[in-house]
Image (tube, one colour):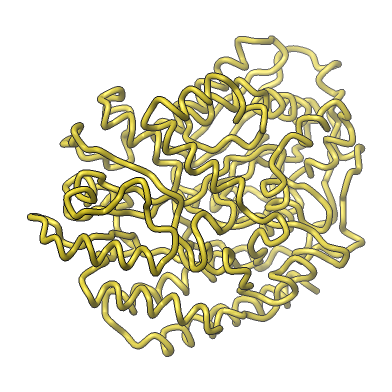
Length: 502
């Protein structure tokens, strides 16, 4: 049976062309928990929490012939390969659904293509994996089926979702509604070249946990005068560093409980903690302790700095851990990683270690990064049901273990984290040790303060990134750079509220 459904009455979408902007291919960002009031701009009248009629899970039983389910994603490297392998295994495990996985380039390209097809639901994919900064966009597009509705329609799935870490579901819950049905979760970690740290007299079993400690460690490494070392710490300029540090310190960047008890309409970017963080970064650069990679770089320059031993420490996403470990061990052919810009001269003798990402007051504090897996409300009930079935397969413990070990995303289920195969990897392999560090950070995240929900999130990131580029690369004064970023971000919030909140 084929019917036309919509998840809820969408808001006016004039804003879409204006707010879809530059999104990083791999980024750490936020999502949201709900409150008693309106959350993230969704009005009570539009709330779709737990409405089983929106998710026809039984339609697969009456479908004739295999149902094709198309999945759009923006993954690369081993993550892309692992997703394709999981889809192939699912297809081989049953005959009712055939999943077709389609890479869409970067997250920016994926989102633009999705936006272009909003007017024709039949042209949209059945599942779309979008960066976590797009939570509000996906809700307001009116094209996705809330996971809460599917759980209500398929009560047997409740046990699976009860087993997911609270910080993960909190990150994607808005106004009491859980939106994505599955998750790819990451968090920043500290990568270190243990050989350089040891040569500098740094105890690699006691890596820095705060930004002050990170500076002290960088000063110790610089003082060792190690040949070829340009700067002890390397970082690609991106706003998510500041986002994580602010969230880890319980500092909002927008009003209305960081956009969780109502539509975010006022910027709170201008605050003492933001200035403090920018001053820390600028002084690190000025003192030769930090090599700042421009935000427009290819995305691998910071990894190459560690590989080439021009830097000794790097803060980056946990999603790179499996790829880095595979390259160092020679277990992956660089040709499999086309599109990542991998340097063929990987130093396989590199001794890499991992630690939780340092923060203002402690290590491992911040917010969820990664992507949400949204079930799209297309015209075919059977495709919705097939998509839900595949997502439940993906959430099975063995597949979550594989998603961690090869896909490099963190386990979100306690059953996956406790799996003997994963526990063995955590204690015996380089990739496993790094992922264990990241998982411990994930467990420490506060579900009561999971980060902001912002309508024009891409504008926030673009403007903050521009301010950081100016301050760190051109030594521009901090306050004027932040004032300009804040002004542009506030204008975007005003436009969003006018077009979407009304």
